[in-house]
Image (tube, rainbow, N blue to C red; front, top):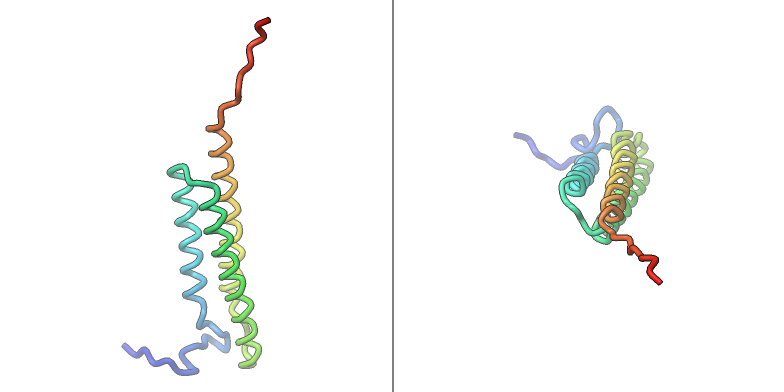
Length: 115
């Protein structure tokens, strides 16, 4: 198994692909959060914190991968962009499901009309 960290191992057909596994890992964590939210009730604050942190980190990663690809005169990987968009949609769905589950369990006070 040849695992050299050289310039030619970071490229796939003149496309900068070094950060693709990191995008796939963040997408995996987004799917994991969605599964957890669907199975059990999760605090909306935990969901918002995890989703916002994940979106910020992967957005910065996408930005910097574009800068690195530009500096090396290569094409940027479209795989990273699509992973970011899908992860964004999954996080929005997880937050929406968490909000729906939180609103179903709120009890609305019932007032009687006794005089």
